[in-house]
Each structure stands twice: as structure tokens, then as C-alpha cells.
Amino acid sequence: MTDPSINNSSRSMKILFACSELTPWIKTGGLADVCGSLPQALSQRGIDLSIVLPGYHTVLKNIPPPEFVSLVELPLGTITLCRSTLHDTEVLLINHETFSNRPGNPYMSDSDRPWPDNEFRFALFSQAICAIAQNQASLDWQPDLVHCHDWQTGLVPALLSLDATRPATIFTIHNLAYQGNVSLKAYNQLGLPDELLIQNGLEFWGQASFIKGGIAYADKITTVSPSYAKEITSKAFGCGMEGMLQHRNEQLSGILNGIDTDTWNPATDQHIDTNYNVDSLSQKSANKAHLQKHLKLRRDPDALLFGVISRLAVQKGIDLIVDAFSELQDQNIQLAVLGSGDSELQKKLQDLALANPDKIAVEIGFNEALSHKIEAGADVFLMPSRYEPCGLNQMYSHRYGTLPLVTQVGGLADTVIDARADKSMANGFVIDSANTLSLQRGIMRAIDQFKDQSTWITLQKNAMQVNYSWTESAAQYNHLYKQTVQMHTNI
Ligand code: ADP
Ligand code: GLC
Image (cartoon, rainbow, N blue to C red):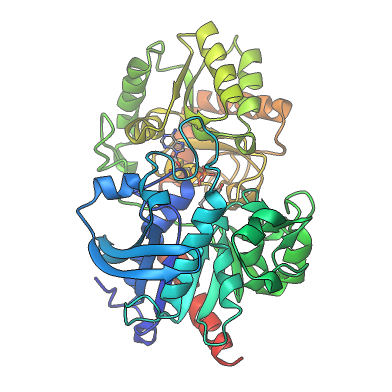
């Protein structure tokens, strides 16, 4: 449905939205949630938008059979282009055996190793996106702009730059640490163009970098929060790309992610024990009791219950949580962790839970329902990330009146206001740095604050009233799309 309040001039803008994950079809993290909800908000602005996604096994197994469109011959092989629909938006599926024959995670095997042919898979995906972008896929449709997300689509702006009739391009960085770097030998074996392998192009410290394709060649670069957009031009956060990002700084901006406020709504959430809203906040405690029971934690309303839902990765500061909780055992605190990823971090967490079974519960795996129960049941949500491009869980937590405790980086710094600030705005706890001592101090502050229930409730209410809908961010993307198309047309 088109939002009637929105200006009609964008009605004819055609956007191809290229991504490698899409909630609810295939998800490893926040990228999927963003790609599953931003297009809806853009379509509501009257934009003619199609999503393009690999036809993974998991996707094809769970959706009605998609409609065949065409066979497309690409330099790396032949793909079958099909179309399906998600929330009234067209989804173009790139079908190839290297996608459809791999169940589970889109990038890794069951033994948590990246598929050895990932460079082939995502170079092929990128060639397919370029064919659609150039109206060479029998769709009779050419976008004005291709919006690419993360390294899996990084080659698209690079490959399109070789063609004078190309549409405009935007590349969004969701996480600069995942770069899709391959050896020069592998690059050459893929038969990709030599002329892109230059210092101001794909070449990256003796390798070829897919993400650098997006950074070097896209007409505009965005990232998912204003603070991360600034941070990544520095050595500390630039992951080796800071030079190129400084060089392209004028084309770089940060647009804060929104969230799907229907899926993450405590008033209607089907996964949680008792629904509540800002006016019936006292009902939240039933979800805490339910979570304690569900995870076999001690049933204690006075214990401050900390929640974590996370990829188990160094980025997320999981090691700091283990260290901090190991030393705070004399406090009346509990910890509920849901996560999957790094096996060493997993083991540390499990050992901690084994040693403190009524205070610490750890669930390993990907569990959508439990993630909602933790958001509703926890008092505090922990995210002591070393860096965080945006982060979605702190915003989900706000919606559920669960106060986030975060480091002052990226999107966390842009969304969480510390309890020491003006009480009419404060909505969480911000710690200065990602180390165990800072985290322990932050936890102690949360414990103290919890004793002052009336202020605690004020902070919860502030949190629940923040507007995280996509409306504002979609308007910013819409503006950037128009500006980029115009800039491209004038070249
Ligand atoms: P990132 O994309 O870096 O992992 P985000 O905070 O942007 O971090 O998004 C993570 C998303 O993945 C959230 O929707 C979160 O709830 C979800 N998530 C992460 N781990 C799990 C898990 N083990 N089970 C269910 N959902 C998870
Ligand atoms: C990435 C980032 C995360 C961000 C998400 C969606 O995975 O790590 O901070 O929220 O992408 O943009």
C-alpha cells in the first residue's frame, strides 16, 4: 500500500535491492532483518522496488514454488531466474546448484567453515545482479539504481563501472570486518576483469577484495549509523579500508537502521508469555518469571536478569561478559544467553553456566522464539560490543522496556542514552570502553539503579517510547536514491 502523505515525484524510481539474507526466509544476523523490512518502507513511498537474493536451499524449501522467468547465461555459468513475493514486494531468486544444494547457513558448512567456493558463488550472484541491472535477464525492466549490501554484492558496482549504460549504484556497509577477500590466483581463475585489480579498485594488500568493489566504485556509500560512518575512516575501525574510505569520504554517509515494529512489539508478540505495553508495564514481570522458569533459573523477581542474544563473535564482547560475570557472583544477578558461533566462546559460556546453574543459562543455537522471550523477560540487555555498525537488539530491547547496557560505539552510541543523563531522556547504560572493568562498573550501576524502582520505570518508559519505525530512515534513503540517480544522469 502506498503512503498517501508521500510526495509523488518518487513514484517512477526503480530500485534493484541486492542482498544475501532476507528475514523471514534466510537469516544469520541483522542484515537479514534490515533487508526484510526496509524495502517495505521504500515501497510504501511509491518506489518500484525488486529484491534480488540467491535461491538458497532453505529459501526454496520454505516458500511456495517461485515462478520461472528465464535462463540467463553469465560468464561464470547459467542461472535460472525466478520470481516470488514477500510482503507484496517482488523477490528475484538467482537459482544455481551452489545455492540450492547447500542446506543451513548461507555462507558456512555444518562444521562452521566457509564454503570453499564462496568467491565463485557470490561472483556469480553479482554477475546475475549486473545482468538484471542492465535489462539482460528477460524482465523487460531496468532499475535506475542498484542498492547493494555487504561484500556478497561488492563486485556489482565494480563490474557495472565498466559499462557506460549502467544504472546508478549505492553500496551499504553493514559490517566492514567481513570483506570477501580472495587470492589474486582465485580472482584470476574466476576470469574477472584485470582492469579492476588496481590500488583504487579491488586490489587490497596483495589480494582482491569484494567489499572494496563497493567502496571504490559505488556512486554513494552508506553505512548503518552516523557514528559508524565516522569511525570507519579511522585506523581503529577501518579494517584496512580507512584510506579508501577517507578518499571517498564525500560520498559516504550514515543512515541509522529502523526496525520492524510489528514483529518486535510486546503488545502483540505471539512468542512471549504475557503481552504488555507502556501503560501496562507491570505485566512485564510475568515474562521475567516465565523466562526464569523456562531456562531453569531461580524464580526470583529481585534478581537483576541480564539478557544476551548474539552471534558469538569477538565483535560482540562475549568474552568480557564471561569475565565480568565470573567475578560478580556475590551479586543477586542472573544471565540468560542465546547465541551461536565461535566454539571457544561457546565453551566459556557453557562452563560458566555449568558452574552457576541457577544463575546463568546458556542456549546455543538460533532460536527466534527464545530471542523474543529474552527481550521481554530480561531487565537489562547486554551488548558490550568492540564495534557495532548499528546493532538491532538494543532497539528491540527499548521496545520491550529492557534497558540496554552498551559500549559507546557505532549505532549503540547513536541510540542509547545513559542513565546519568537527563532522566527525561535516559534509556539505558553506556560504558566508555570494551573491557571487563568498564563492563563490571556498568553492571554495578545497573544493579544500583534497579534498587530505585521509580527511576527504573521512568527509564523503561523513555525506552519504550522511542520511535524506531523505518519512516525516517526510508525517507533518507529515498532522498539519497534521488540524489544519486540525478548525479549519475548528469555525468
Ligand atoms: P549482527 O547483525 O551483527 O549479528 P544485529 O544486532 O544487527 O547484530 O542483529 C542480530 C539479529 O540476529 C537480531 O535480530 C538478533 O535477535 C538475531 N540473533 C542473533 N543471534 C541469534 C540467535 N542465536 N537466535 C535468534 N536470533 C538471533
Ligand atoms: C551487521 C552489523 C550490525 C547491524 C547489522 C544490520 O551485521 O554487525 O551492527 O545492525 O549489520 O545493519
